[in-house]
Image (tube, rainbow, N blue to C red; front, top):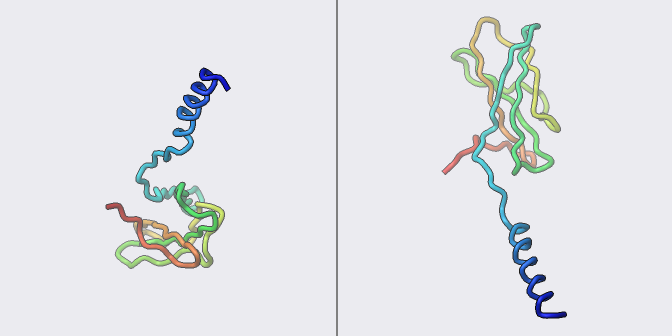
Length: 114
């Protein structure tokens, strides 16, 4: 190899070698739960899948109605989707929803940031 070819190969390796090792920039996001009332009175609830979530993640969805404590809405873990249609709403109450991730069968707590 000539000196010029060797120099170009080294420069090419440095230029593209570092970019393949750089980490992705990631934002500090939570699940971003959104609830939308449908015309039939049910509520569509959706949330984010995060880039760091494992492939086999599941979720539990909870609803807090009025002044009552939160109760789990789903009967079985929600998997392969990040949405749920809640049809069993208490009439005349204000409602809030939140999700908890299930990883390896264990429910995770709320996401905390330092």
